[in-house]
Image 1 (tube, rainbow, N blue to C red):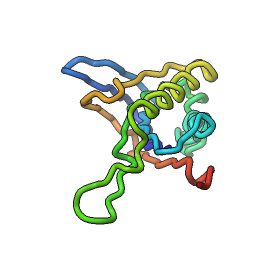
Image 2: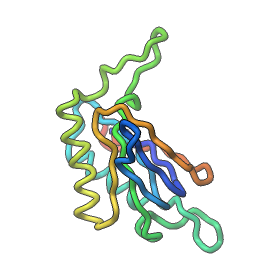
Image 3: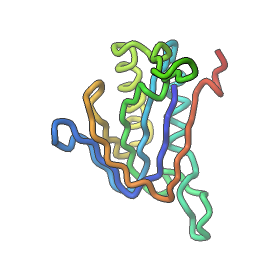
Length: 152
């Protein structure tokens, strides 16, 4: 499971011209689910995203988490994070989990954050063609990969 985490001033996602998810200051999380990913990995990654100290303290050091700033989280499904672009010129998506299993883990991830951390969590629509507006603050962007924690 891969999360591309961006510190944002605001972020919103549109489907068919309508806003379906919107946050102010917080994190935009593009989430890719891989073949073989588990709920354990989803919990680990969710905990990491919420507790990652990427917001500035009063000395302008990245020392505060989403929880510390009472920030918000926008989670958008992003299967292309699992693309293999090594061979040829067309990405291969064989590492991406099939939609039905990926959707379950995507929903598990978002519900876990809502239930455990009690913060505002917004989402896109899984599998939809989305337009994502990201006002990246910094810019600050990190890639978190559960495979680095759970070796396969």
